[in-house]
Length: 361
Image (cartoon, rainbow, N blue to C red):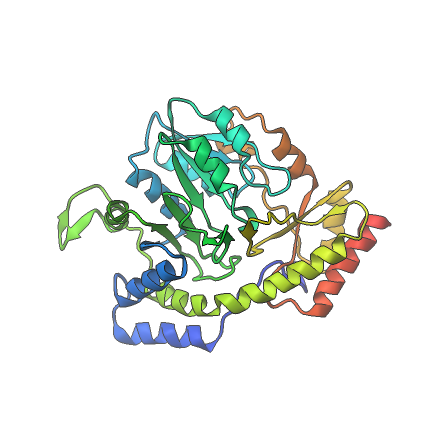
């Protein structure tokens, strides 16, 4: 299969990452060392939180959040279906039950009104996924949760995003970040949890390292969920690139939104004025013939995808009832187009022109 000429996402890496990884290898300390501590420190500073705890990937970071809160069998966690599947499967991993709620048709983030309808006496947490790097309606969700339900963030797509001037990652009790290669910054694989709660941070550190509070002293049941020193060193360099990446992506997204907004039948992403999104995805809606347009883009060498096929349709959730009319409607019309900081002006123009040709023919 021929690789697309214009990729959906493209990480920004260079000699700085190579040098950082080489220095780790030369040090002989490959895990649980100073680079992990540095990555956690600079990440916490960037996101205005007291604590950051790095993990091997975002999926185990989500599970660790639930476990740190004591969530398990018999408990429910409200999640959107319009997300990558691990937002929901991580709930299953700890023995709890995911309850799918519908989303806002403009932001694709959790609809607070529908979340309110899904809360039961068994509900222990609500996981607000910041779709495409635009923070969810956190004030409204906080009101819905009240004092009895914990509000958590799935900020996997939202490194550097802000809500009412505050960074994602400090908007709920805890937040998960992910660093896979499609994200705005990457460590290859990797995840991280932020929190202002010192006790939760300590619980997270125990969970990721065999429950070990001192050498060969294991206080709780834990796992080996550690990030490597190589990943952490790369993460420090990547954080230094973040502002430049986001500046370029915001420019690209603004240009594409203006261009696509003039094409009948195409609805560009909507920007909640309370937020500063980071455009990890660029998802538009097509009034009709979405699958034909997707096929045409692929044939033209332009990578496009459906981000995301609703999680509740997956076989692993076959026994869970979910009535999600907005999610179903969006899933039939959504299309994610290339959006990364290395897109050239000519490539952006080609993407827009190809969409216009396919939609209007």
